[in-house]
Amino acid sequence: MLLVVIAGCEWPVTDPDNFALITNDTDRAVILYIAYPDREVEIGALAPGESEPRFRGECAESPLIARLTDGTEVARREPPFCSPDEWLITRRDGS
View 1 (cartoon, one colour):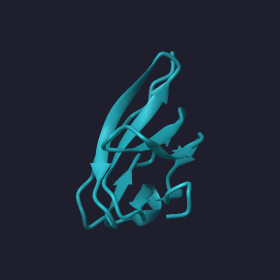
View 2 (cartoon, one colour):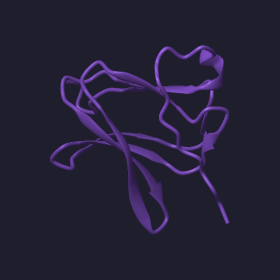
View 3 (cartoon, one colour):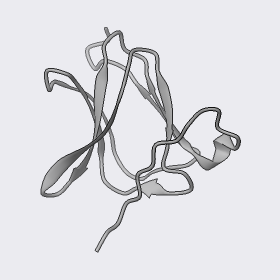
């Protein structure tokens, strides 16, 4: 069985190398999901320009998906996603 630990953390991060950072570089809010083979699980949301540390000392071993509030997928990060990785979310269409 695969277990992924997901933890939201508060700023300021005292050891940034121990976290993976997700940044929303779009002009719209995005909702974050982790995609398991049989379902997607919401793991948080980011406002435009917002960053959030995730996966302290852990890895996401399933794809991460960023969707607009209407459900449109705008970005996908394939695994693994581990600290100290960074994911800059941008719109696929370049906007």
